[in-house]
Image (cartoon, rainbow, N blue to C red; front, side):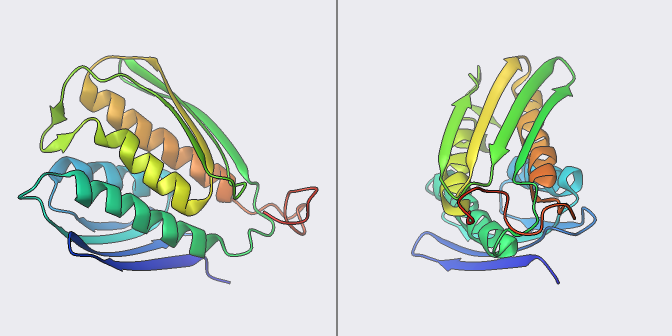
Length: 195
């Protein structure tokens, strides 16, 4: 049974189409209008082994905020749809990932209860045309629409490009773990019987 989720989101600020296949091979087709953001989403797909399609037309003449936040919302909706009833998934994931001089901790629970803990301090306002403050906003939007508990902590800081790329890669590896199916889990991994 395929685990593919899609989302089309159209507002006065952004027009977005997203598709994600949790059982892919890391293929990505991404066009957001923000080069560094494209790079991060392609890295997310590659290192999580997800097949990802993202097409965004946003009001970049204003700034990058709506494009990045709304993309997080759309990816979150697509993830939630791809997860379906969450039967047999491992639910939890955690990764400590090095990116050159930086080191990132990422842990998540696909509990259905959204919560984000984000601990990373950037020293520049932008990387390319991507505002660094939007990293947290992206993950906040994605966390709440997916319904996941996500913790991201920068253990060792450094170059802001490396820090952000490390975060996206660590999230990818962690989500891959949590969405994997385990034949020992015949229902959902919860004493409640639902996630």
